[in-house]
Amino acid sequence: MLDTTGNLILSSNDSIGDTDKAYWQSFNHPTDSYLPHMKVLISSAEIHAFSSWKSENDPSQGNFTMGVDPRGAPQIVVWERSRRRWRSGHWNGVIFSGVPYMTAFTTYQYGFKVTRESDGKFYFTYNPSDNSELMRFQITWNGFEEQKRWNETAKKWQVMQLQPSEDCETYNYCGNFGVCTPSGSPKCRCMEGFGPRHPDQWRLGNWSGGCERRSPLQCQRNNNSGGEDGFKTLRSTKLPDFADVQSISSDPCREKCLNNCSCKAYAYVSGIQCMIWYGDLIDVQHSVDGGNTLYIRLADSEFGRSRMPTYVIILIVLAGLAFLAISIWLLWMLKKRLKVLPAVTPACTSSNCEIASL
Image (cartoon, rainbow, N blue to C red; front, side):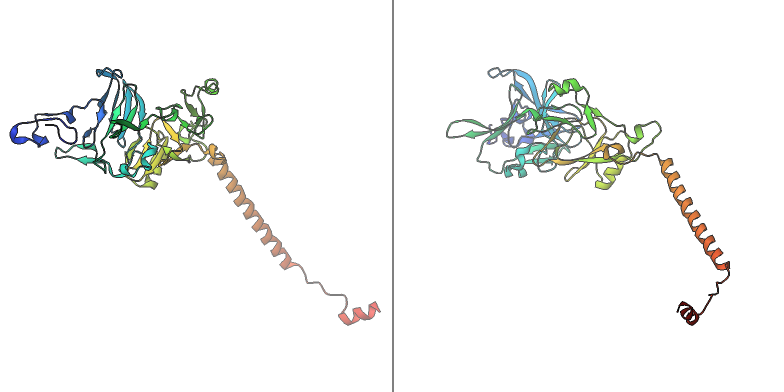
């Protein structure tokens, strides 16, 4: 039986329409297209659920796959063989945060869902608000994720959007600790507190080498000297890949990052909670509609504050207290001496002084 969702179901006569008792169904064996009401498993490992065609006219398996990476918060990923080509950004319970167009189309806000089925497993599903429209998501033979809608008038599939649609959406286009801005010139820059790892290549427009930290963090210095590390804010951001998610509030999230020398950045996102990055910050894009705020950990010197060692500060404070104590003692001694001096008798009264002056 081919049902109205496009699912081809093989079952016995007494279980027609019951997918739980089906012998086989096409939704469990997808090829290159994700259809509404199809379920994609979310497990502890990457799920390469969909495979591209080898070419535009050859349906044998190609070089690209699409599926779910559950690490941190789930996200959709396109792979070229085993290498990432594009990712959607993290799922916040409403949208994929790295896909700008999702905030513009209200149909998405109630379409994608994460559901727990009777088998105890979690699945991604997509149920469009308007079932009269025929839609599908496809991984194309040349590595693009396309959303298509059936155009009844033209009798063909019409592309509504595709990813990656420009350079900044290509995975880690600016390298580790780099930030890609679609409207920027150049598009790539290093995060504050970082500089190009290979300056000569960077000037030539080859940004794949990424950036490196200019000043070591406090915990990375041998004598643990200098002021406490701080955080720089990067807003409207497609957050880095490979986050570690913690179920804690914003302030404890900051403290957890600050107390771990391996922590490079953190974010707090409604629907996800605390996100911490212990490795390099990878695939960061700026100026994303619906993006989030990233707090990047930097050395105290990057904030223009004094890096004076603690013992010097203590010596200055002690010297100030000593100066204050000596000043008080001198004032007390001066006051004491003034009290023991003899009183001065005036040479004349006021009336005598007046006569003398005349």
